[in-house]
Image (cartoon, rainbow, N blue to C red; front, side):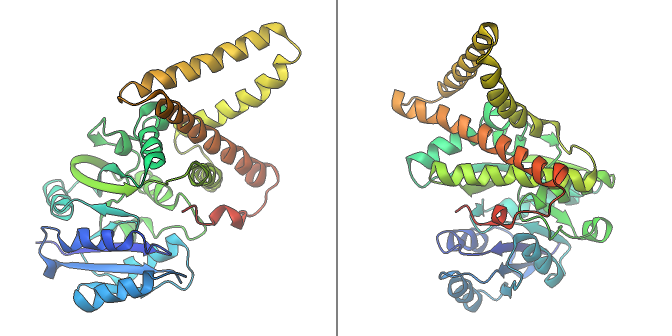
Length: 337
């Protein structure tokens, strides 16, 4: 059987790290074939002591100090520290189904032509707002063709979360880009596909993700995602996925359309009509859930925040990276949790 390393970058995750590690402890895969590299980035809360308590109890769980703090540095440390046949990248604010490791290994053994497999991500909630946000993140109207979130497809995709990679992938493609405070996994998966390898989304793999629980944190999260996506595009001199442009065009429409409508009655009618259509579509999507009108309005607000935050961050990224030729704004790497 294949050996497996689970690499978990972690910083200030005392609210989630136990749930993450517990999901590995109860996994169905033989523990003698597992190593867990928890790469801890100088946390200011109880995260280090929690990790060490698990290390003392379970010999296959290892504390790895990440002095450079950021996520891709932690991932690279974990990959370097491990020697297993298969490497699974997991975030500390996520957790996996008991058979996730077993099913990942079985899939890669049954499909030697595939370099990477991931599964669908279900939301884990901590209050009503996180449920509202999670709904937006699970709908095509919110996230487009992010199939690992919508669960609407099994097959070859452009990216997945919490992926299982063959060890030789890192020899071929290299490590995670340490300059990318956000989007480092997407960028790595892009390089993987550019190298001629395939990424597969299997519905047999179930994982769970702790959704932000305030609209402000949600806005900050996706603003950063949009911002760093431009950095990825500039690095590779191309648009990595076409769907990333839709929120940017939406924000451009909101701004330019508003200005134009001040000078033209026809433009005003078109502007108002398109916005009403957007809101109407958002409301129609919310009827998948039986909720009150108040909650339904919050769901629509979550769609708006998702699209406007990502699009605005993308516009800021164009200003910084393309027009001004600046280095990344470090504030765009601050935690949004």
